[in-house]
Image (tube, rainbow, N blue to C red; front, side, top):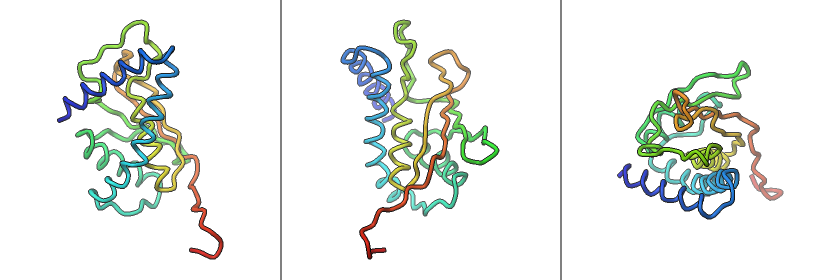
Length: 166
């Protein structure tokens, strides 16, 4: 259930805060863990969703918001703030289930509590040949009205096939 996941995630973040000296190290570890999850989760997502290859970053954004977030977190973030070049957008989470029952202590003001999500997105997209930058720019845990994840397309990753194979 989502409540069990939320509580388990809270215990994980609490343990990381005990294990690492500062919030920046915890943020990096959450991102790294998320990346490893995303690398593996993409296979499950593709098998269960029957989604084909996305043709552009806008289509990718739609699949992330309307299919992936719905499938794994039970929410559908809105897609906003597209850059003029179409290579950057924001996911607005009205309700982030990871932060249910959570209050950040004052001594952890630079902790990006849900940073695991950034790593999951980065890892999953890398497996489908998209290099992206993903970061939180607003967080309800820090007093913002919404949670905002900013995604920026960096480049398409070319398959490095051995010579003579296609």
